[in-house]
Length: 526
Image 1 (cartoon, one colour):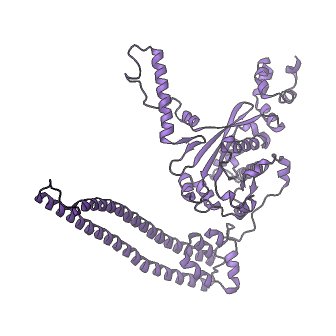
Image 2 (cartoon, helix red, strand yellow):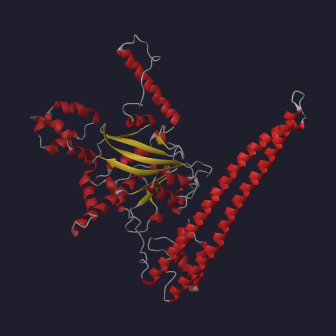
Image 3 (cartoon, helix red, strand yellow):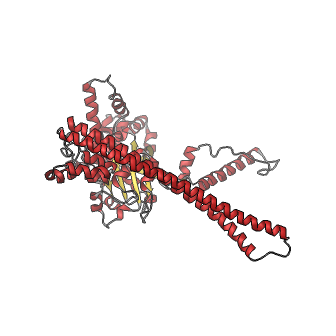
């Protein structure tokens, strides 16, 4: 009787207003209350009505260590000096726990793979951050972030760090920033309160958000919005980042069944109707994630809006997150920046022209990369040899100073002559070896120059001949996007020739036009 006899939907509406701290007591009151509070329908109602209590916890390096090694450090055992022979079993257990704790602290401190923000990379100093999400005091998911410490002096190897982390991080980093982390994107620069603030300091990427399906039923965005906002505002991250970016992720809102359908839709065994339905759901979920980020205060990056097949890309500065969270209706009314109408892919003679340009540009890039790599190796070898010779020269110089001071009385004439001859011989060998190594490096550099002087001119002439022939057949430098291709690979030997091949009245358009991916030649260069 009483409340327990009420229809389930009415009971959910009443109980969902109770604070999370009362859930345990309510669950003990009766079976009907317990079943209601544990149900997905209840969780969904709490989420959509705004009564759910969301909190986050950023896992420290020590907590991650405990997750990775739940049994503590490996290969830890007690020795005779750790406990006495008459120690009880309980005393031995306590001693072992203390020894494991010391070993854990030593590993965290000495190896440096963990920090207060999570897992730390030793080479580039970036952090992989994990934030646990709790709803109504129950863990229901996680958020993963990547933080790259660009610093303030523009000397951080930003592109190298993104390459080392992952393909996704590489794509993000190279698109938005230059090699030391300075911003390349005008829309983000224009949003800065202080010029240059977002181009230095921590660069943050939202890598993944995974929260229990029960809390985003009916495509409710409340829990994900609040959880991510709390994660970015975590006290441990305060002052650690100056810009955060995210690419809309369909998996945030897709159910496990929908993700599986998405995977299966790539095969030929799925019919066209099912593929179209899955594709539609894919974009619905990507759009939901976009609007989730917009609710937090994120903004779209117009420069990344290109293909309709590409997900939405957004960014935020710390100042954006100071405003209240927007309602879904508010962001739903605001139009998104949609991809422009782009020219079609190059086909026919234009397609042939583009393929020739790609082939020759890649060949030229391979030669240039090989030359740069060999020169780099030779420079390193020269520096290493120079350091070694400097050490030997220092030793010989110190011995020469002693000899120039005259023969000590306790040293025999024969020994003295041997010492002087030994130093002179060492000086001679050092000079011969230095000259031989320098000659070897010079010969190898000459080979590189000969290769540049022979292969590159031949490749350029072959390129010019083939491009000229295709242009005479009706090919268009502008419509084939040949300049875009050379700009992307930075083949300056080809770009000037291609520009000269464009009719004067079309040159400005050729240099500013979008290709099929929505990129101009100038964007390709940077």
